[in-house]
Length: 275
Ligand code: SAM
Image 1: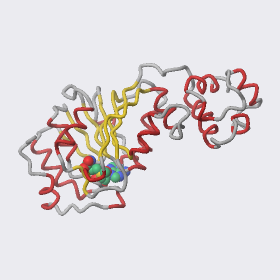
Image 2: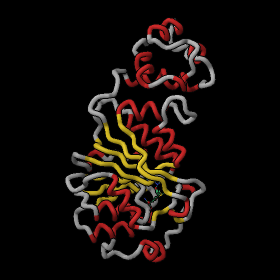
Image 3: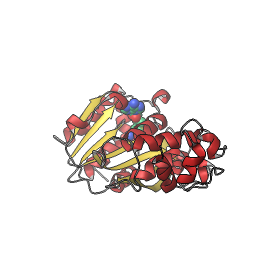
């Protein structure tokens, strides 16, 4: 692909953008790859795209080339701003960059619906943002899709089924109100510098209604307690959550001797309704 802008390696050399480990900086410099991620995000031409952590702009350029109506990019490291300004110049009126911590920046005043979110983020920031995007009080949320890079191990936790080691809070939160799909994996050497682990892109689309009725806070409370002590039987792990834990489990049709990882989403929703 060619957008007339210099190759990312040259951008990094010109602006002296060495990667900082403390900010989880592992760059994707192959524009064919970033274009693959942008395509997985879906049809972009009628959408604003929120990108977190654009860095030198590989994914940003792909999102713009794929026709995003507008990209709003939030970047914490000011060293990238001059390189991002060059991209903004090549796409007049279509790239807005906010300098700041995505965890402390409200993007909504700068976005018009429909909004898609795409990001290649450091692991801890990515998981925290994902949980925020999955748990707003009002549903459907402000976004119409999320296309996010995670460590493969986290991606597996998001799409995990009951009975597997990876199954837990992240799977239940994600699968209650969205359809998360593992899109593809990226080996360490596709990044500069290469991280220690394989990464994977996960694509989420929100359901109009949660899959099963439940109050979000109650569901989160039950799930957190159940998986907080995942090796214990539920009648022990949930002590303190219900006045009559065994009664609540039986009313929800769950054996009190079962363990959290054996219980599916529908049963957890039933149990949360006993609170
Ligand atoms: N998107 C670029 C790419 O794919 O090459 C960069 C990816 S790099 C893994 C993560 C980027 O997120 C870095 O540019 C880093 O500075 C930025 N970042 C880290 N923490 C952030 C935060 N809390 N808010 C916004 N950006 C952050």
